[in-house]
Image (tube, rainbow, N blue to C red; front, side):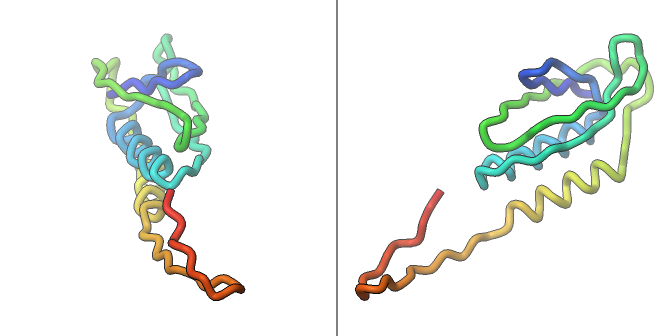
Length: 111
């Protein structure tokens, strides 16, 4: 299990879910983009609830390992979607110089 912390608080979730969120958040950060994610977490009474996060550019989150309060929380479909989106987001951008109307060239824009 891992705890995910953001400005709203700290949420206990499965290790694979937390790792997938961090992968996707990193990919989004590098592209200066954001995304909305919805994951399960275990509340203080041991009940599974759901949390929604805005992750990516200018949204700081952190994860830390935590002791398990029961079985590892898993949601394989959500883990798969997060990892797929992370890989898709990382895609290479091929920028080429463009010619301006006055025949001068501009350098590719870099983030």
